[in-house]
Image 1 (cartoon, helix red, strand yellow):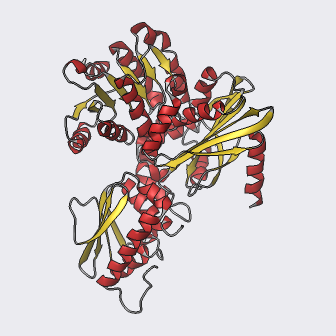
Image 2 (spheres, one colour):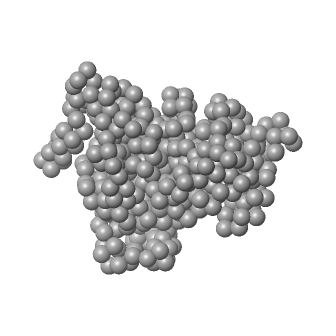
Image 3 (cartoon, one colour):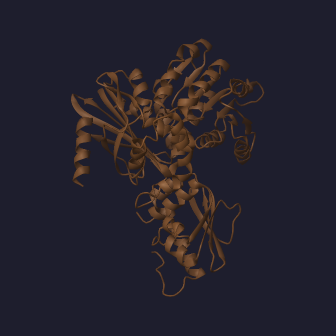
Length: 393
Length: 126
């Protein structure tokens, strides 16, 4: 283990030179509790980032498709953070490598199908005493913690709606594009009336309010892990539904047109299209009258009963995607490395194993502002009121 | 108060005043501050017809200063004539439109371009 060679534990950030990974690296270096190794396929980029960070930050090459390469890098790790996306392709490969190496790991997996496969590694992780915390980014991640927090304020929590808004001006990574194409082109699980049902993406719209400059959006169901994990660890909930929305508003029509034209009906086409779309993101960000803001957000509404009366508690935040996605896993990895979270074998989503208040307090320290609202009524009534206001505009 | 468009050609002094006003607005605008959080960049602005250079120095989310001349390392370079630059930083012209008309040259990453575009537009909202 690296800790035997150094006074500080070593944190290996897999994909650490990437669009989200670089933020994890910066945060871990700034926190100073771990020695950071940036492991990336793009070694030159990793080396430049390591040089910028200074100190004993190091860059190494890793190929996530090569188990031997992963094993060699993980041999140096006390804790790992996996930022190699898209996660429907890489989460399980990296998860298995960490379990085999016995290295506790935090990832930012945001695909529902990959999360199901990660949860299936539970007994293997327990057998090696390895702790895998899956989905500790923005959504999932902050969203799961907000669900826990909102539910804790109700006597009887019942229904949970989570909505994310992602801006085309807020990311330039191909993995993010591939994730979005994956999320909007399949039927994906939602948890309704106490059971999982597959709903087609881009349906079951709901109007949802975000702070400016995002404003009010008409979000739709899409593939994400929250409806898969939250009901397992918060069984008091009878529904968990996740919706998403892209900025600028006009990009929804572009996505729908691409689907209707059959441009996204195979993995090969999605891969090719993601490559084409990546350099066009600046153009997409200008589809509206105004440039899309380089900001993204997540909102969690949980309704239930307080003293027998219906109430909805809402938490939401708007910030840049890399901060929202990169700061939480850095905090979680730091907590694992320093013993704030006692490692135990198994695969857990954040709502199952991370200290909600402590983590939210750390996010506040990093100026991620989480706002709160409450509404005297059910989630359905809140959704109806927002819809009526939107359609009356 | 925004430096008003004066009659006659835009001068270097006009552009300095416009950029100083941009700095003040950026630091006071809540949404722009959110967009700039943790951002450190030296944004060089060149008025091609005047042969003059300024650098907007952004340090950890705050526009620290408008430097007369280049500041190294240069992360972003915006080049146009003084008239177009004045229009853009006064909020009268859309930088993307000026770019598509060939009136503006931008050198930097796509992410930086999108962020600067948005800042220039949202700075007038609050």
